Every structure is written in structure tokens, then in C-alpha cells.
Length: 189
Image 1 (cartoon, rainbow, N blue to C red):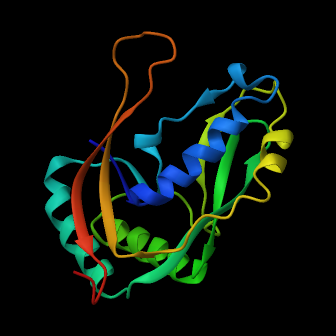
Image 2 (cartoon, rainbow, N blue to C red; image 1 turned 90 degrees about the vertical axis):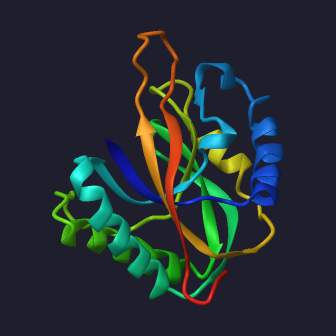
């Protein structure tokens, strides 16, 4: 199964971001972008791709440990950016270093569970809002998000998510995400 460790924004934070995204959708060319669904919004901490079923129990145990070792921390959705003209995203502010540490711990949990992982890269927190294909340029959308500053919340859990890829062949169909594990951060819940 395709899995990734993630941080999910709480409903109130998603509401604020959804309001900002509705304004973005009125910009010229917005209909040419593939907008992500609100229910799929997340910060990916560690993408594991295909994980054998028999590896999931050990992975879950190690992710639970990683969560337990990480205290809750403040975070907010903030501003945005783009990766070329491929992806438009919302960023984060608050204890971004704690978020990076949690991402490193989730990556280490997967590696120690025997799951092959990509090469380590500097973690850049982002929540994907839309995907493009060269036209229109995403710069105007990122610029329009520059003043977005969501309300801070306390990150209190690490989540393991399964990505169910489309199988129908219908153009525009997107993956469905399903939470398969949740662990409170140290001292939370």
C-alpha cells in the first residue's frame, strides 16, 4: 500500500485557507489548474511509496515512538509559494523547526522499519493547493497568498495516511486519502 506520514491541519485552519483559495480561483487562468480538494490537504512529513503489509506494524510502532518523542508545537498556515509552474502551495509559520524534526523522525521511523526511502533532502513544509502544467504561471497565485496568515494552532498528532490511486482512468480523477494511524505527540491527549 502507498503510505505517507503527515500532519493534517485542523478544520478551523482549513476553513481559513479555503476562504483564501476561493479568492485564488477567481484569478485569470485558475480554471486551467488542478486544485486539490480540501479533505486532502496535509503537510507530508515522509513519503514511503509502496509499503508491504507486513511492514506496517513495525512502522506504526516506530511512528508512535517518533510522535511520543516530539512535544506538541505551535503552527499556522502562512503565505505560499510555488515549485516552478508545477505546484502551488501554502506555507507554514510557528515552530517550523519542530515540524522539520518531526519530519526527520518520521523518515527515520520508515528507514528503521526497512522501507526504502529517497535520499535525505532539506524539508520544506508545504501544503499543495493546486497543480499546473506550465500555463498559467503560478507566480501570480503565490503572490496573492503573500498576505495570508492563518490562526495558530497546536500540532498534537502524527498521522499515517494511505494514498489510494485512481483506477477508473477518468481524466482528472485524484488519489483518495485514508487515515490508517494516529499518534499523539508527547504530552498531548
